[in-house]
Amino acid sequence: MDSTEQAAGEKRVQSLLIEALERRGLARPGKLRLAQYEAMCADLRQRLAYMTERNLMALEEQVAASKEAREQDRMPIGNKILEWAGQIQPPEEGASPLMRAVFGGDLGRTAIAEGWAPELMGFLRDKRSWPTPYAVTLIREKADGPRRHMVILEERIGYGQEPNAEDRAFLARRRALVEKCRKVADLAAGDAR
Image (cartoon, one colour):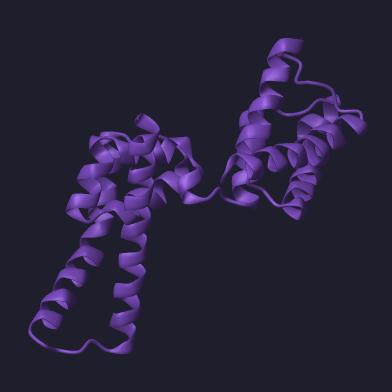
C-alpha cells in the first residue's frame, strides 16, 4: 500500500468507523485518558486503512453492538476492535508489521530455507502474535506433509514424470505461498535500510 492509498484508507477509517461510533454516542473507553484515546484512534486509522468501505461499516456495526457499547455507551479498546477487524477482513500478508519482523529475522529466513514458511505465515495471519518455541515446533510438524509431498513431486518431475492436475495445482499454490513469504522478507529488508 503506497502513501496515497494509506492516507485515503485512514480517512475512510476516521469517517466510517471512529466518527460513526462517536455519532452513535459512544464515548472513549473508560480507562483511557483523552491523549490515550487519540493515540488509540490514530493507531486504528493506521492499522485498518487496508479495509474496504463495506467492511468498515460492518465493523462499525459490530463494535456498536458489542457488550461494552450496549451496557456502558463506551467503545471497546483498540485491541478488541482490531481482533474483530481481522475476522471481517484479514490484513494482507505484506501489510503486517509483525510478518515483516518475523520474515526479516532469523526465524523467517530459516522457515523459507527449510520450506515451512507458508505454515509460519498462516500462523501469523491467524494468531497475530510472535510464535513461541512450542508454536514453532507445531508449525514445523504441520509443514512436514506438504514439504515431503513437494520434494517427492519435484523429484518425479526431475526424472521426467509429468504430475497430474491435482499435483500441479498443489505445486503452484505452494510455490506461490513461498514466493509471498520471500516478498515479505524482501519488504522487511527494505524497511531495515
